[in-house]
Amino acid sequence: MTARAADRARYDRATAHLDAPLALVDLDAFDANAEDLVRRAGGKPIRVASKSVRCRTLLERVLARDGFAGIMSFTLAESLWLARSGFDDILLAYPSADRTAFAELAADPKPAAAVTVMVDDVSQLDLIDGARGEGREVIRVCLELDTALKFLGGRVRVGALRSPLHSPAQVADVARAIARRPGFRLVGIMAYEGHIAGVGDAVAGRPFRSRAIRLMQAAARRELAERRAAVVRAVRAVVPDLEYVNGGGTGSVQHTAAEDAVTEIAAGSGLYVPRLFDNYTSFSGRPAALFAQPVVRRPGVGVVTVLGGGYPASGAAGPDRLPVPYLPEGLRYDPQEGPGEVQTPLLGSPADDLLIGDKVWFRHAKAGELCERFDVLHLVEGDAVTATVPTYRGEGRTFL
Image (tube, rainbow, N blue to C red; front, side, top):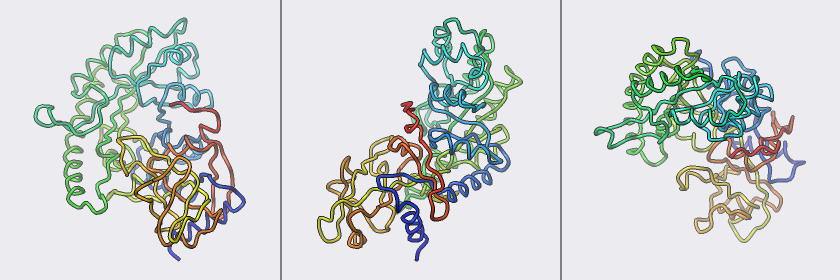
């Protein structure tokens, strides 16, 4: 029996009393992935990205481990909720225009002390001040650096379109504006190198493309390490007591951790290891989060149909954003239909061994987005469900 076949047998036994659709997290795999992230971070703390987990129980579990400290959140409303739930170090990774939430933040000492908001433009400070109302709490802020690799005077860039702040001088200018402005305190710098951390460099069947990605990423790491160090020096000249410099992501943990200027690493997807993180030469993880759909039809030889399954992930549309049939091994989509909202036909010889009511296990393309589809996660240890816990959605929290 292969390792994957053994996993399928375990998951089927563990959930035999449960009807699909359902989602599970294999805690043995989750914990092993967490341990590997800590190893790769080389002693620097990991701030866990909540959008890649979206389950308070699992956030608490990973933060109880040595090597993890703090949360990187994705909306201001989520940040306030987490702060009021007892989490005390929350970095909001994206700028917000939620005036209602800013008014709450400015009026409540507890979340104001726990939450740091992201800015990259003085106009964002104006929005926050305009939303304060009667609230007078000091707002903790973090500056985001653009990590893109630029060529030909900026006419060619590789990297996400995020912050407009690219040079040390640009970042220092905004740092000075924050330092002069009452009601704000600059506490950190963040730089997410998505073109390194979020792009696999071992694309199956594409050796030349993979080689090109590795060359690009090597050049990007060198350029960013030098520029990030210069940015940190420039900002520390303005704010000597900067609390942290955050960088990285699941795919670049060990590389980013090697930079002296970086004090902490961000990671989250590496806990669940969705399918987009299969194609890396620098690490390999164990798939920990899966969902199951039930077989409801057997249209013919080599075909079964499961209920639902059309759960595409965000990003540029393409086959890599789709979930993949995982267990039993050997199933594939019908190219004419793909995964459907209500039903999904699956082709392949394993279909002939599946009966009505059997489960087919899938892996989602991106980590926490799976939790937007399910109210609960069944936590599996060995071949038993040991707990069933709510996702954000199960707690009535859909922040985006």
